[in-house]
Image (cartoon, helix red, strand yellow):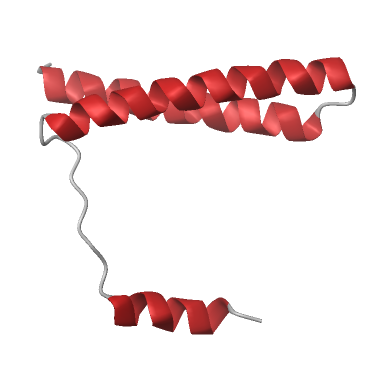
Length: 80
């Protein structure tokens, strides 16, 4: 497994962890549990951002700009 694939796998795992922590925070029944999940989620989101930044710097995670007319179409579709 090369470095790019390894980083992709790590990023996917980190995104999954974020999802679990988010649901834990949403479903928590006490303030202490909610705070624990929220804190873990924030830490995990920072980790995910760091991984993304490193992948992006190496050209392993690229994005394409979206045309404004496509943004406007979606906005109109889902707007009030």
